[in-house]
Structures are given as C-alpha cells and as structure tokens.
Length: 323
Image (cartoon, rainbow, N blue to C red; front, side, top):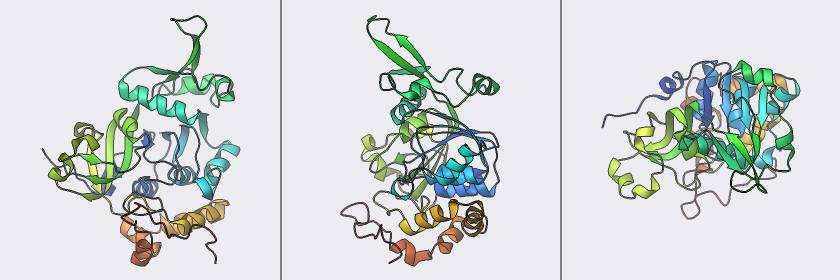
C-alpha cells in the first residue's frame, strides 16, 4: 500500500479555520502536542473541539485564541491544576462557547459516532445537574448545524415504563489527531498502554492524522494484530515526531515533564505570562526540534526517558521542584 507519511507542518496545514476536531490522550498522557503547536503557529481560528478529558493541549489552544466552541467533561493537568488556567479565564470572560457533560457521557458520545448510530443511552446522568443545566442556548445551538439541537434527552424506556434513560448525541468530527508509540508508513497504529477514547475518536472522524514516536516495519505490528485497534484504512496521514507529546507522557517511551508543566501553569495564570510562554516555546521556534532544544535539549529529555521495567520514570522528581 502507498505511504501515508507526510511532514508535520503539512499535516497541520490540512486543518482549516473553523474545523471540528478531537485530540487523543488523557490529562497528562499522550497528547499530540507537536501538532497543537503547529496549529498555533498557523494561527488557526474558530476551532470547535470535542473531548472527554483533555489537558494542556486544549488549554494552550484556547489561550492562543484558536478555539471558538468546546464540548467536554473537564480540562486539567491533574496535580498541576484542578482546571486549565486559560480555559477557566476564557469561560469566566465569556470568550468561549461551551457545553459540559460527564466524562462517561462524552466517551459514550464518541462511541455512538464510531458505531454510526445517532445517540447512546445511559443512566449515569440521571439525578445530576449535568442533566438539568446547559452551557449553550437554543439560539447558539441553532447557529451551528454541527451542534446537536438538544444537549440530551431523557425518556421512558419503551421496554419497561418504570425505567428511564438519558440519550446523548453522537459526535462526528472533521479531524481526529492522535499521538501513538508506533505506526507503519501505510497506517497501522500501535497504542501501548491505555487507549483512553482514542479508538472511538478516530472512528467517528472524517480524517485521522496520527503522529508517532517512530515508524516501524509492517511485519513488527502485524505479528500481533489484535493490538492494532484502529484499522489502517481509517488512518489517513502519519507523521513521525519523536517526543511529539512533550511535556506529556507516552507510556514505554517517556514520562511527563513536571518542570515544564509547572512552568506552563505558572505562566498561564496571567495574560502577560502566557504570552511570554507562547513567545518562548511556540511562536519563537519554527519546528518541534527547536522546541525540544528550547526546553532543555537532550539532557532534559534523557531525564524523562521511561524505565523499560515500568513504562514510566519511577525516580522522576514530581514534587518540590524548586529544591
């Protein structure tokens, strides 16, 4: 089969202003950050994001002015902040349109999209304020045909009048952007460790772009086909980007970078600090290699390399970073 490998900058240029997209990973794990930085350098605007548990990938896009509307469960970098600082400020200032769901219901929405059905029934929202409250008005929903006409719908089960369920709408996006450990040139993908909702996100997207730590021979992934959870025909483009999730972790490759995450969250609390961070680490560099040099180069990266026995770095200092 023909190669699907293209340069990172060329892949990012495929995403136009106003596109709907989801980004793979979970809080501090396996986000396609090199791709995110390219979108910021391209100064994309009015992006419409769907996610279950994003982290700083969304936060920096929101802070850079790239995002118009989001549908999500929460956005945070776990221990580094209970909520993303730029996302919080954008919501408080009325600078972003948003709708919130629970974590499970967002995954259910991606699953419905992946299955090709219009909605998914669930019970977990019953009795919660997520059911009772909405972030988007009827007028805001009507203004964008890609937004479901209703946030959700509570109904009586047709099989048991004593039973009630909540229907949540399926998600379909223009793009899904994933970062994985290994891929072949023709689009076979191997996610090691937890997959989160990456598979469902890929299968409900029109175009799937995969960035990876390394391109490997087809035979090495075909030997265990049950571990390749995204069919190769669903993957449209592959971009080799070593350390492409930094400052986030990639299981079996490297741990997250607590110093860089602390630096980001410290800067992102203020407009001036956030702009300084952008200028130094995103807009002030032209490529991901230049970014890696800016954060400390080979010495810093080596300090994050995973211990093969664990898949992460057990001796990594994660607290008291100023000591």
